[in-house]
Length: 539
View 1: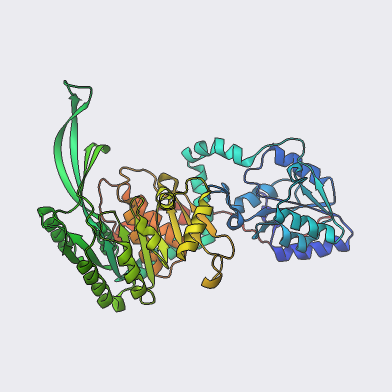
View 2 (view 1 turned 180 degrees about the vertical axis):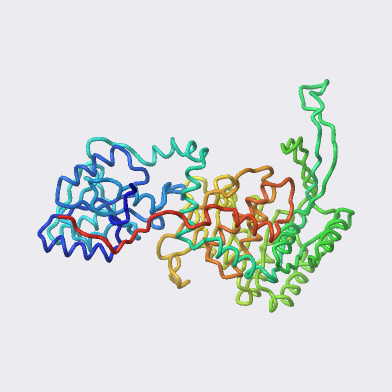
């Protein structure tokens, strides 16, 4: 027989009603508050002690949105499951999810007779805890310190167990399902987004066009003259790279991209322009360099052995820069979004951004940017709707590898006045950051809202181009008025599809559609809701 745990999980409003009933019957309530990421023996002793201090034990947990850990990815277990875990304990009478970083709203609603905190808080001077303590004592309540004599750390346990859980797929499955439910990411919303929202969106892409050259080899043997690997080339394949593949992604997903880029006078440039034409991608190209940048990779099966970069950075001259700005000025009235992406070959400069962004702002619904490597142009992307750097790129451009990721992100977003920032972390997934306030004037008066999304890739063949697919899909989602969470999900889906392929291949709308249809995390997850009108006080 299954237990209905929802009867114990209540909202803040329901907690106020319960408090009135308890106080009317002169029954003492006890409150415990924390994250409870993994309920371990230390927690059980702590809760047992707390339960002995009164007639009813209420446990409040800090909601996912209010928790900030140094890596930005905690809590490990979603709030709904953390609430369910506690509700399953016989000694716990009620569970409530707190949307604030402290227990003050819970204390105000419940007015507990006793507030129990761990022994480590006995000499704690954190302003949040001191405010909680003052509030409890203001109406005659008591604060008691006890850790139940057995001390564990959820964070330490997760640091040890996390890799094992991830390897088993347990963490990602529950996280993604819970997050999707909370973010309104369902099969219906995602299908609607890509079919109605992506169609014929007009997106300008400004950045370096690159040719990706793959040489597939057969491992012959170890060379006789030295202990090095000897290989024999079997075939060669060329792919669109850089800003060119981003434009190709957009086209394959149903949009109408316009690529603005620099090229050379060589055969590779001619071939790239022809490939764009065959895909019906509109392109304005400026021949400002001798040769197109080429990234050459040698592979045995899907394993990369060597990468050789051909082509040097060629900064824009002032004449070409003015021509690019003129093109954008002509297009801006018809554009839904603009992508600036700097691959380090000179097409995107700080001067270009300084002139182009004010020209575009107010005319397009999505201004999105990215860099490849530690390009300082990232710090010229002011007032963008979304930036999508990797964690290493973000830290490198400001030279900060010591502070927590949320702290680094806050400083960058405040400096650039960003509406959203998605930090990509390879096989670890991505972190989505946005201000808590709707009014831009109030954006950075409090810490950022952060959402962690594990990788959606089930198997990775070639990580090349994942960021390009992510950027293209994210831009289209923003132009379709998707939330940042929905944007992050559909962008991660495109990246997951890309890493399953060899080479830079455009992700098509039918591929995205099919991927969404087979995702179990987009079905209605069987996660209990933190609200139940059937709450009652047992005698």
